[in-house]
Image (cartoon, rainbow over all chains, first blue to last red):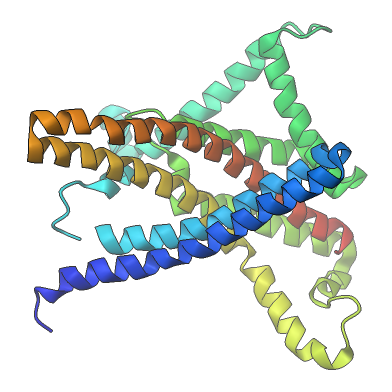
Length: 77
Length: 250
């Protein structure tokens, strides 16, 4: 493999790795959509649901961050 | 990539702290920040709770709110037996929160951005919950790996999956915190790198255009402050959930 292809392969690999962020986006969108529906139906339950909202947000955001980190590692190391 | 114009991972490099004495005993800047976090936590609570007023002032209220937040979380997840673990969970929360927040300041080192630090905390939580589980239930703790109400023929498949998921707990627990903090700091530096590239490429117009990435970075400060809090909270709540499994089996 010619050595000048390696930087290009780095960039392509980092670009492919970032596709994983899509999953996190879908997850967070779903989460807040479900939260709005739930609060719309039962506004009194808002306080109880909110704890799980932020827990779910952090958990699904973390999966997106994993992909972002892999992309960064490929790009910068 | 080696030819990158900015060294984004340089901010996570360990250097020695406390001058020549620190170098001799291997005291790093990461340890320095941990020490600072510990001192800040102790002074904050000593100052805030010194008055002990019935109607709390602002400082005392801030200490009490953080206390109540974690105590409610412990009660909701672990129940009455969980009270014994409240000091541990609270200390984890406040130490990680302080580490995350200190890392947001320029030239300060975010010690939670090192996998070694977060993995140490996560492995300690994992060992603690395992020990508590076996201590409380004896060998009955192994029932944790058998999902309730699953058909018998599925068990040979489910039990290995449950065991695998149990042992991957410390991995996801530690990587979540480390990756969030690291990604946030790298993002800052990448966007800050745009500013340098713009000014180097376009001169005066570039300086004007660099206001845009600067504004983005300011917005990211708000996001990162939020993430610093949320990740400390999630680390604490996952600790509670793991300890709940050990105390109550599902």
